[in-house]
Image (cartoon, rainbow, N blue to C red; front, top):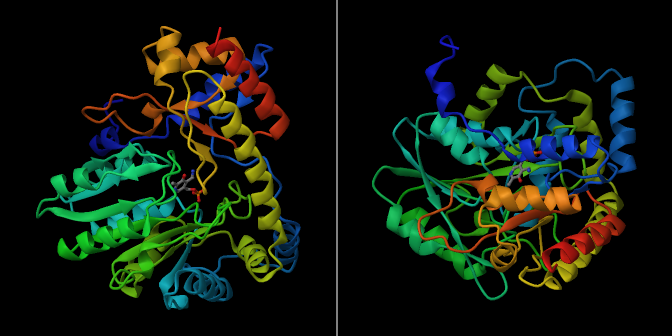
Length: 398
Ligand code: PMP
């Protein structure tokens, strides 16, 4: 163990994977599991994406491709993002990646010096904090507060923490785990703050297209922002292809060039033939993504209604993402379970319902009083949602 490099002590992980392992172990002992813990999809990748990938593979697209991606895909994605964000992106603004996740570390490596401060959401995707600290930065967490209809971005906690060393801002609008979405006014306030403090922004837009109502907005659409933002884009959710691994970094050419250089060092290129599959998906009739959304919407509606019927639980209905973040403070009190892990494990053992808690998305912030869990409905069918949450209700109200 003495040989492991010092920097590894600063590397975090996704503790949600440990919940998956625990649920699997409980299932292996003959117990029925209702998997709400992991943001993975149990829905098939659209036919056109699969067919075009197989065709490309058979046609010999099996060698290396350009490090920033197949030009046709970079062009098509630039056109797609330009149209939905109202910003002019070209092929040179796009670097294809093996998933959306690598954009986090590459953005930080490209723009953060050791000792620089980075604002990031907590609760939030745990890889932000991990990558900031791993690369020698100082991680400044900002929170969300429970509003009337949605979680609200805690602007005050952001303003309070900014110093001259604050260089980067990570924004995950349409947020994992809360499902929170910024209002147009909040996006404007963020843009003003970014300009005032000369910040660069990672816009994690992993859930931009996982939307059931209304239209997603992006910080990049605001004046002066496209020059300072890198979009984390992923095909994982839109085309239900988490395990295929394809995403992209989209932003100013000088930053994208650095990210492409990191690609050369890390993986040479992303999978070649899958890029043709996704190209076909983007240029196709989009019936696949529509089918995926309609399945997810039914699950969301079922789960939200059931959760809100449980005594001691309240849950918003986010317009986007595939996560629910119910407040379970009263339910935990009713059961005499104060500790998150005790609550999670007791529920798993009593009902088979498996979920993550607030602590899988960062350490609790000072003054945090209420308790939350996160349910992902991307990997569980509606009949099982009904059955599992029915058992949860019976247990929590007993
Ligand atoms: N950002 C957020 C907020 C996520 O929830 C995820 C996946 N859970 C990702 C990025 C990365 O996803 P992928 O690497 O599959 O594109």
